Length: 459
Image 1 (cartoon, rainbow, N blue to C red):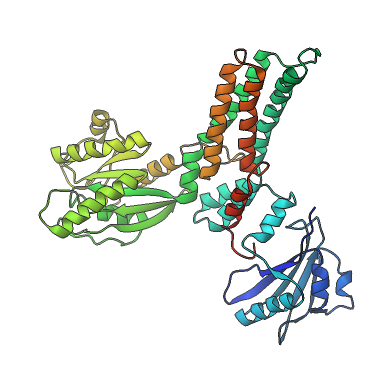
Image 2 (cartoon, rainbow, N blue to C red):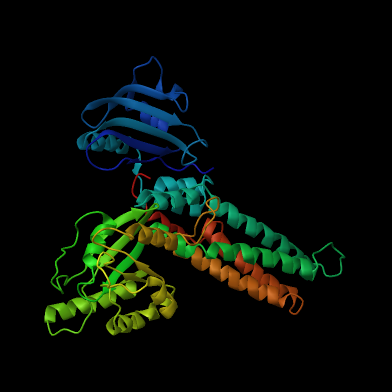
């Protein structure tokens, strides 16, 4: 446990509210509280029992407030240090006045994420758990909260530390063969070392396969609505998000700019973009809209290609152009719209077989078939099938580190029995270190600084 100088900050959001919390953490926060809190009960502040709330008068900078205070004794606190929290009324001037008083009594203003950083340094949580915490705070969907909470509760840490233990065991045997080749020490055979490395690689590969789903859960899924003018894109957008966001008329080319809307399905946030109809046009403004539509399509995770009920050569040409997206792991879905109109719709099954893409029939006007589309979209977003007890890889730095470790272990496995032990051990040790960067065990200072810079002051 490391006890540092006292720091203080407002830990609740800025602005007016019913209650605000000022947190002090460090070596002697109780001594600071004793100079600015007058308990209602006949007890000295320095005699406060930990984890018990006391009412009293708060002595601020130039005024008094009535509130509560609680003491958390190290190491059983959020930061692992001694911590005091002052609960006051949530007026802006009240919060600032009480915080200013703590500064007058020797506290230093806390930096961004400093309380959580102290918790990390004191072994209260891992670096990946800290990232899970900030993901929860910034989450804009239920699934994002769930994924962040899994990371915060050390699910990923536990999985990765299991892999590191396997690698530690393999390294011990490899190093024994390097340092004491003639001592006759009990060591793993080549086959046993290969089994350890292969097992570790499989575990990491399973984690890496959850990254796309984890990215969707954290950042949302971008969906572009594309097609010819008057195919029903705006009507479908309104139907998907449940409100009139886009203007709908029978005049082709009404949508000139990108119209955006979002909704949540099965806990995942979907961000829809209704684009201008793609066609050859002499209208300068509409032509700019078509260019923007193609740009939005290139950035979308899913592209919905709408046709107005009659599959034409123009639809086929458009789909062929955007099929290139699939080489980047992105998805295309053909939507045969306007099932409410008679004798205008080709069979979705026929289109799907012909072009090798999913195809659905629906009516954006009546809503028939829209529920099926929503289910298909949610299924695509959650296709990673990540184990909720382990969680998703949601951070790019986690994914990159896992992929790097996989490459190192694959090389080491291939070299067992063919190259000297010290060369194999070098790759295994580098993989061990790379995995440790995720949890914080071997993370460089600049990575730690970057992560905690994402936090607000007070957390």
